Length: 420
Image (cartoon, rainbow, N blue to C red):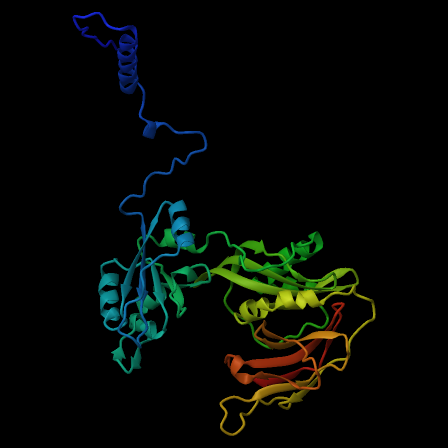
């Protein structure tokens, strides 16, 4: 391309001519060169812009006990994860009153959301509250069969009251919502623990998936002192991915948290698991495995303190004296004292002076709810756990107390059973 310069009648100063020539060259370059937006830099993303149909729609429903509509903000990590899939998240908020009619109408037009977020199951089953009768969307069998429960991976869509998330198997962008729910699991950033040793990692990556899937192969890794209660989760789960998250403990007793991605016919997402392993004859063996939410939150928060108390090297044959269960009797559930709502499980702590903590284990349906108790400085007081800290499963439970010495050695009380 040529640029014609119209020279003025007077002779140009040398530097004026240079400026005009530079301007002409720049104009030519702007025409012939591709735009910066069309040039791909090395390593830059080639993902296309999100189109109008690439939206994961979330419907968040407020509790049937209030007339409010929930907040529609989106947690940043979920928004970024959706964008990595080439989608945007759009949240719409609803009050529970009248929601069933809105949902039924949308479902009939195949305009139902990809993700449903609730904080009360009355939205599905129907409920009567002081605000009146609230119809449930589950009155339609087709809708109920379309619901796919999500655990843990979409909790960022919940409000402060917590709740539940469901995918809609019939929705237009179900596969995208499913990919979001099954994105790679991450460890909790608040877990301050040690990196896994190679031998602990080797056992964890085999035990964790086997436990979640209910595989018979788990028996090969169990400690002889593992406590079992009748019943198990009948849902067939398939683990897709695992993330090991360090450990607390010492070279004899280790508490290993993991987050696993899984899927089944009616449920998918992430599940947090805590494995408790004890070294027996140079091999790590499984004492407990738990996906119980109290164990993986409140109990885990106490692990840094417990781990800091395991300050002595383990010595073979050093076992503290066991605790002794007090009440209730075998087969009984604690009865509340007069004027109280709940009774207590009580025990007499170990009398060994080197015991730094006791763990109360409640085993149920191949799961365990754990509580840790640290000895009182003056000693002598019985330990107790309120029955109100357990949930009802309509199954057989067993409970016992572990006494843990400062070298990680463990002794166990006798176990008792009860129906709950």
